[in-house]
Image (cartoon, rainbow, N blue to C red; front, side):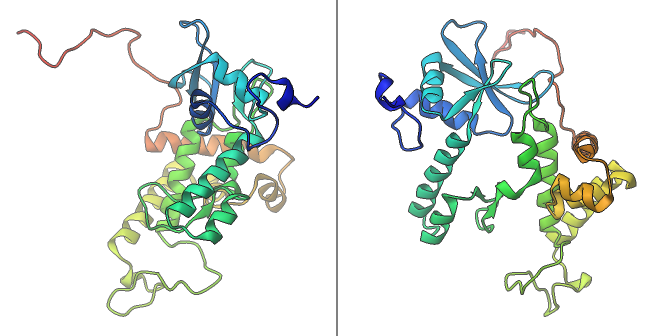
Length: 285
C-alpha cells in the first residue's frame, strides 16, 4: 500500500497532492531563507515558525501541529535531528511549480513558466521590471539552505540579506563584464555604457555603495565577496582558484558576510529589554 492510500487525508509523496489551507500557509512560511518550525512552548498543539540562525531569531507565525504532520506525510517537509521542521526538496519543487503558474497568469510568458518549474526564477525586490534570474544558482541561497548537524543553516538570515544586498548593488552598478550586447543599458548624451561620464546617477550611487561596503569588509575579504556575490562563484570553485583547503571557503565566507552584515547594520540577534511598558496611542499626561 502506498503512502497516499495509507494517509487519512489522502496525502502522499509528490508535489501534486492537495493541501489544507493551514498546511499551504505553513509551506509558504517555510520557503523563507533560514525558516524552520518547532513546537510552540506557549501553545499546546501549535507550531511556531522562526527565521534565522544562531541566537534569537524572528518569529514568523503560528500554525496548527496537524499542518506540519500533513507536510511531512506528503514529503513536502522533513524533521532534523534537533526536531525542527524544514522544507524538503519536494516542497521547494511544489512552490516553484506554483510560482510558474502564477508567473504565466501574470503574463511572464509560457517560456518563463516552463523554466520556473525547473529553476528558481525571481525578480529583485522593488524592481518590477527587472529581468528574471535563477536564484538557485546563488551560492548564498545554497548556504542558507544547507544545514549543519544541529539543523542550523550554514548562513544566517543577516549574512544572507547582506550578501543579497551587495549582489543587487553590484548588478545595479554595472560592474560585471557582459558576454553579449545589453540593449537596455542606460545611455546619456549618446555615450556608451562603458563611458564613466555617461553613467546615470543610479549607477554612480550603486558603485559608491559597493566601494563603501568592500572598504568596510577589508581588502583581505573584498575579493571573496566579489566572487561570491558578484560573479556567483561556488565555494568549491573559490577553493580551487585560490588553492585553499577543502571546506575552508565556507568558514571565510561566513566571516566576510558577517562583517558585511555589520556594515549594513543587520543584527544576528535581537537586542533590547526583555519586557517593556505597554504603550497606547493616547496616554494621559
